[in-house]
Amino acid sequence: QVRLVESGGGSVQAGGSLRLSCAHSGDTGVMAWFRQVPGEEREGIAVRGIHITYADSVKGRFTITEDYKNDILYLEMTGLQPEDTAMYYCAALLVGPDRFSPASYRYWGQGTQVSVSS
Image 1: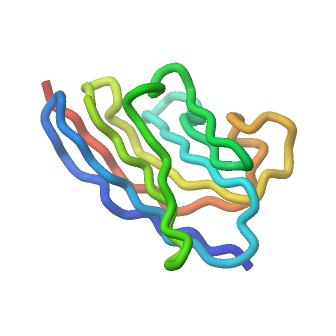
Image 2: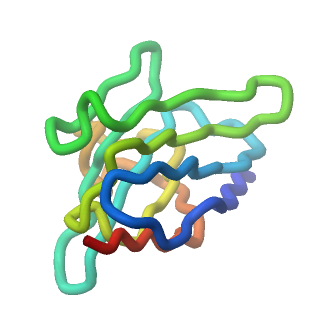
């Protein structure tokens, strides 16, 4: 059984930084970070498989890192802007063809809120 627990969200001013954590257990396979604004579709922003890939919206500002000893996947976010305000989710176990689609992942964490003020 896969378990995912996110933490690290909060409120920052534009230009600030945050580090999100996803503590995970079980056979997670490919993992990813998504975000969602109320009323909008969940957006895939970063994927950790054999390679790490990023959506254009976060490329150059967000970085996936990993603590292999403690089974924690991080999302390091810099240069945050108000449009980055969203609930951020960790996902695991790719079961579909599109790594940036929420429909392709079987397991989800509960999410952590990020709010960026101007």
